[in-house]
Image 1 (cartoon, rainbow, N blue to C red):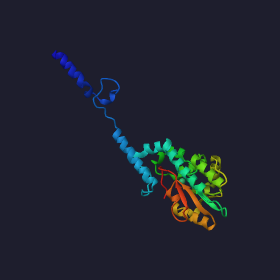
Image 2: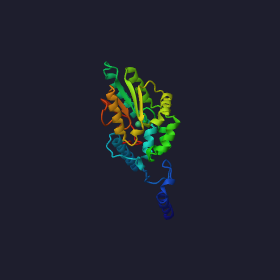
Image 3: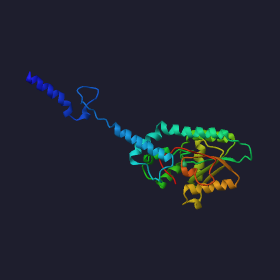
Image 4: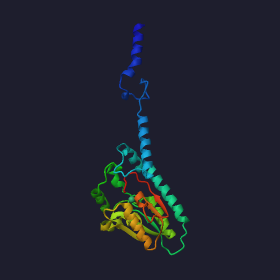
Length: 260
Ligand SMILES: [Mg+2]
């Protein structure tokens, strides 16, 4: 009897004495407490969501790369449904506004589109560079641009076609360099974009200016030329803030990089 009691005590403490990770939680015997790292994962998820909201609300100081702990979070956001749903929401709202604009007048009502992460997606490049975990390398990025294979952002293409059909003049205003004009035109055409009025790229005198300054100057020139800028789409706040701002601007999501 004493022997049997000892055996039972031994069997009852055996699971506690062995490492927990060798147990399948669905089979017996198993440890009384199974430690799952969920609270930590949930906290990281919440912190990274909070960080992304701060990015999109333009509440952060200039940043050069995404927080190390948010690498998986940003990858999942960009490659699963979150990014696509956010893009659709912004472009749908832009479309509702575009349809509400009174298009009568001199035919110079304009909609400005940025190019990278607005009309064209560089996700294939960023997938190879940690979705923003690496500090931006202009040499490597230029090599990607020169391939000319960036796919269209589908929600933007739909909006683009709609604003064109409504009678807006479409202006493309990009931080890409003038030396990439030809490949950018080829890439845009291959992605399905047509009939823009102007494609404005950085010329040599624009290098060294912040995007906010460069794009503000170009918008001012457009206004001087008689355009009425009533819509603007961009993935960076520097696409839409500054002077000669559009009547309405639409900020597309981009948690991978920040351009001042
Ligand atoms: Mg952009």
